[in-house]
Length: 65
Image 1 (cartoon, rainbow, N blue to C red):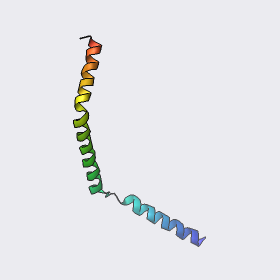
Image 2: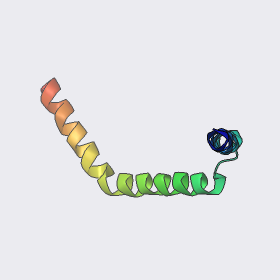
Image 3: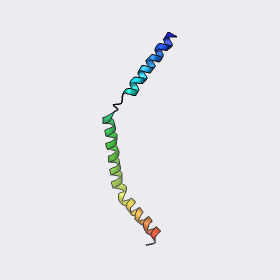
Image 4: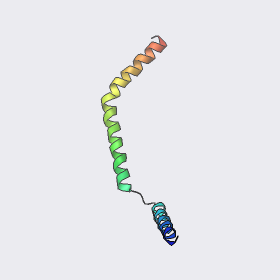
Protein backbone atom coordinates (compact mmCIF):
# COMPACT_ATOMS: atom_id res chain seq x y z
CA UNK A 1 0.00 0.00 0.00
CA UNK A 2 2.86 2.35 0.85
CA UNK A 3 4.40 1.57 -2.51
CA UNK A 4 1.21 2.61 -4.39
CA UNK A 5 0.99 5.80 -2.35
CA UNK A 6 4.57 6.76 -3.24
CA UNK A 7 3.96 5.97 -6.91
CA UNK A 8 0.84 8.13 -6.97
CA UNK A 9 2.68 10.98 -5.29
CA UNK A 10 5.49 10.80 -7.87
CA UNK A 11 2.93 10.81 -10.66
CA UNK A 12 1.18 13.87 -9.21
CA UNK A 13 4.50 15.69 -8.83
CA UNK A 14 5.56 14.88 -12.40
CA UNK A 15 2.14 15.88 -13.75
CA UNK A 16 2.21 19.14 -11.79
CA UNK A 17 5.67 19.99 -13.10
CA UNK A 18 4.60 19.31 -16.68
CA UNK A 19 1.41 21.36 -16.37
CA UNK A 20 3.01 24.30 -14.61
CA UNK A 21 5.76 24.73 -17.25
CA UNK A 22 4.18 27.35 -19.54
CA UNK A 23 7.31 28.66 -21.24
CA UNK A 24 6.90 26.66 -24.41
CA UNK A 25 9.33 26.49 -27.27
CA UNK A 26 9.26 30.06 -28.57
CA UNK A 27 12.15 29.76 -31.07
CA UNK A 28 10.53 26.64 -32.53
CA UNK A 29 7.18 28.37 -32.96
CA UNK A 30 8.84 31.40 -34.52
CA UNK A 31 10.67 29.17 -37.00
CA UNK A 32 7.47 27.31 -37.91
CA UNK A 33 5.60 30.59 -38.39
CA UNK A 34 8.32 32.07 -40.61
CA UNK A 35 8.60 28.90 -42.69
CA UNK A 36 4.84 28.78 -43.17
CA UNK A 37 4.76 32.42 -44.23
CA UNK A 38 7.59 31.76 -46.67
CA UNK A 39 5.74 28.81 -48.19
CA UNK A 40 2.59 30.90 -48.59
CA UNK A 41 4.56 33.64 -50.39
CA UNK A 42 6.22 31.14 -52.74
CA UNK A 43 2.99 29.33 -53.54
CA UNK A 44 1.16 32.63 -54.03
CA UNK A 45 3.90 33.88 -56.39
CA UNK A 46 3.72 30.71 -58.48
CA UNK A 47 -0.05 30.20 -58.51
CA UNK A 48 -1.25 33.82 -58.22
CA UNK A 49 -1.48 34.65 -61.93
CA UNK A 50 -3.23 31.36 -62.74
CA UNK A 51 -5.69 31.86 -59.91
CA UNK A 52 -6.39 35.44 -61.00
CA UNK A 53 -7.09 34.26 -64.55
CA UNK A 54 -9.33 31.47 -63.28
CA UNK A 55 -11.26 33.95 -61.14
CA UNK A 56 -11.69 36.35 -64.07
CA UNK A 57 -12.96 33.52 -66.30
CA UNK A 58 -15.46 32.42 -63.66
CA UNK A 59 -16.75 35.98 -63.19
CA UNK A 60 -17.08 36.51 -66.94
CA UNK A 61 -19.04 33.25 -67.32
CA UNK A 62 -21.38 34.14 -64.46
CA UNK A 63 -21.96 37.73 -65.58
CA UNK A 64 -22.19 36.81 -69.30
CA UNK A 65 -19.64 39.41 -70.42
